Image (tube, rainbow, N blue to C red; front, side, top):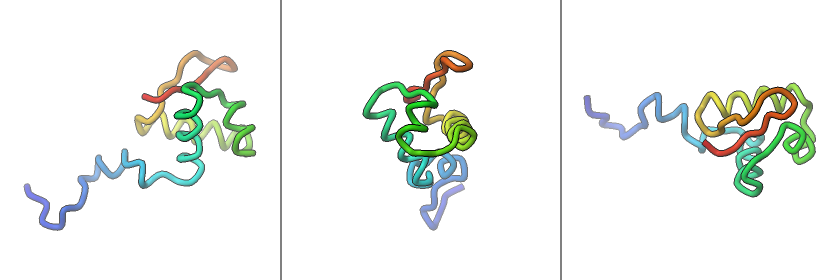
Amino acid sequence: MSNPLMLPEPNELRFSPRLLGVHERAILDRVEEQGLVTMADVMAATGALRESVRKRLGQLVKKGFLMPQGKGRAAAYRKA
């Protein structure tokens, strides 16, 4: 079916970097700069609490922007 309004398909909206919040974009910028970030890196750069960073990293993984590397305290994240 054609899209007369030229709107993105729903699955494209979900993965659009333009729809990310300020914190998610800041995390992605940090990953671009460093190549690999840990939760501690993001906490230090943003001043956000551990639980908030954990949730945001998880959302970025789920949306396909980041890939986890390792597990637990040694976990790091890189661009997917």
